[in-house]
Length: 258
Image (cartoon, rainbow, N blue to C red; front, side, top):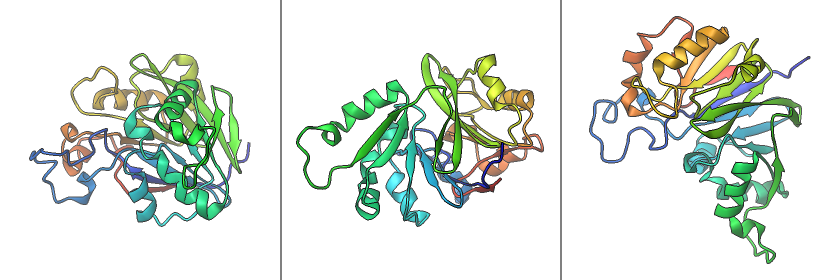
């Protein structure tokens, strides 16, 4: 299959609290290195014709302003936690300028949360300025957004199903600590893999650093970037120096072309 050339921008690479964390004066949170400043995790995926975003966390508005994004064709959601959906209300600006509802792709669990948290967008009585959302319920069936083919991959965040996404030769997996063997087959052949790695110490629902590295070696992409990082991971420069040659910490603003 022929895939369009893609530009992927890491809008945020931090965990739910972001880095620095409010009230923390650890060496990571007080670091002057810009790579140690992490907004909530999200990526922008762009082809020549299509622009989509994976997750709209609390920093969505600022991320769009920082990257000077004037058009957005769709939103894809991984799961319903607030650090991944809280910014959805701000798609109103794209509704206004693009003059259409925003296609939103989410599994049943996330759709339920969106309908609950943004209930006013689905009320029978519409009033000016509410977000206009066109919901598409997804499962593991591939679909296409514009000219970008999307392969959903089921992963597990402890007991919560989380959708990972493969876009051509790029795969994005966040907030997971388990992937079944059948779903791993969908990742194989990926050139660029993104995995969540919360910290060095083990965690109940996220891969830690060692687990992420082990999975990257098993799946064998050309390069792996680690995201959804907490301040407990350590300073970017120090951790980066400890990693295998083809594994790197992602950082806010990182651009990957594939």
